[in-house]
Length: 101
Image 1 (tube, rainbow, N blue to C red):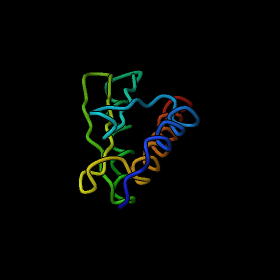
Image 2 (cartoon, one colour; image 1 turned 180 degrees about the horizontal axis):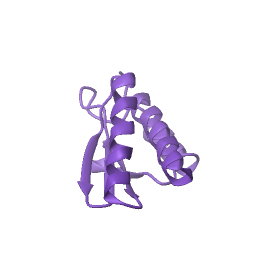
Image 3 (cartoon, rainbow, N blue to C red; image 1 turned 60 degrees about the horizontal axis):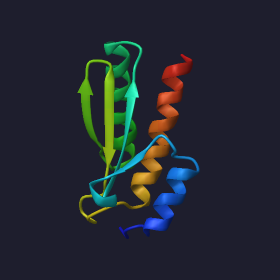
């Protein structure tokens, strides 16, 4: 995988990934989600895990009661690739589904 130019990452964060932030010197992006309940947060993690398996790209996930943080980076490439932005968009869709269900 090819690393994305920083300008492309910044553009995506300004456009459709505005809830994500740069981490680790622009080598990762992360988003914290507040779930209504602990079990809702776990259900979201399960949905994200399924999407990650389908994409063959796996986020770091931190669960703290109702707060779930997802961090994306393509470790084998040493930073952010299109796989990270694609999975971030899918995670955003799953979060929205959680909020509307």
